[in-house]
Length: 337
Image (cartoon, rainbow, N blue to C red; front, side, top):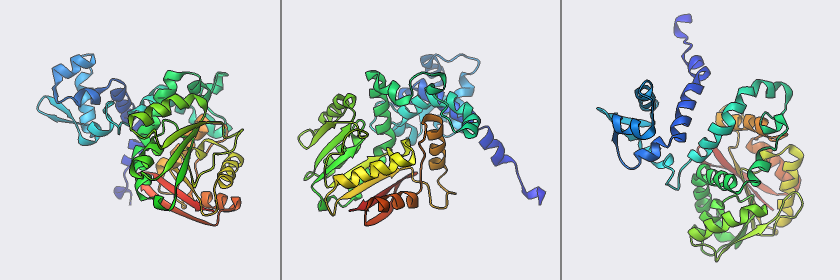
């Protein structure tokens, strides 16, 4: 029996931070954006990136071994995935979130054990400074960067929601916590009969409007400034909440779902999408680890399963619910009033 067992998975997972930090440093140094212009020789690439000779080849070859770069002889190139998702100039760029992870989350996660034992956040609030949202919304440049990062990691799911949800049955929608507005923009682009609204704090308004204008949908998209803790959600046929509910504790989650119910007409729909945890809580490891990240970052936030969400929706008064997979770890929970 012992001859059939191997510690390989244990060691690979335990030392996975090596691979993680290698990728995060590559994103920080814009390796993939550089190579999006075309393959480069080792000498040219290492010089352009400013790499020290001692570690340059190990670093680039590690990216090859990890599957993020390709190499022929002494020439390096992006893989198709790296070229699409890690080039800062492309719409599908997910590196913005990785850049934030590199600067903020990587050191905070060193204190996960303390968080698990205390239930307390381990971010800036631990030292008495402002937390994530206060810091971001107080700095226009950092806010714009963060909202762009959210667009990068959500873009694929946003496009699927825009295409597969039965929008022909509805005339209007409101995207709550709209961020840069990519979900609203994608819905408007594919469904020209719809009128949409992005609802978020006032600081988000110029960023949302710039993004809507760049995509040519300003005639059908508006921005409504507001705080969903203090104000009602604007009325619409469909209310959307993407990566919103997991930021908050259970009473707040239920409050927001109830506000969505009140904003909808009979027959209206609430769409919640997150990295929904599978009901057995044994498969969506990414969703479970995002929930651990909510422990690190927030006083009470956590991720949840589809059955959790549908039960809260029914408590709020919704009559029918369903869970649909979107892409990767993301799924949406739909409720009808």
